[in-house]
Image 1 (tube, helix red, strand yellow):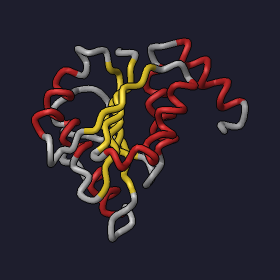
Image 2 (cartoon, rainbow, N blue to C red):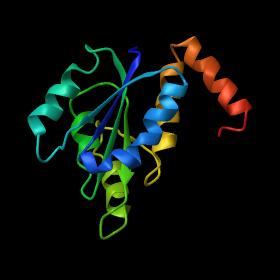
Image 3 (cartoon, rainbow, N blue to C red):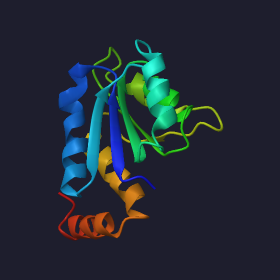
Length: 150
């Protein structure tokens, strides 16, 4: 399994909401690559990233998006890696639309999902997935959880 986590966000404006995922992953010693890619504005770039993610040593991809939140599903359609949907608030429905979009994937295209604006949990979940094959990450996660998971 790859050692890196890709964090994709639909807009550069999402950086502040996504930052806790990168921060917690770095705390666990995981390399993070953050990219701005919209499933609607740059579908070819999203497809290319997803199709080569495993080859580029990614183990998990976190996809943060608001409103229609097509990004997690678009990535999951083009990779066999675990994809975590991070629905973002900011829409007229305050993120509920994004949550429904991320969790309502068709059979065969699963996306794990965390709470609206749940970036920290997205990072922790990505680390837990990586820890299956990485004892260093597993040890740091155990310490984190023993310390009250803060």
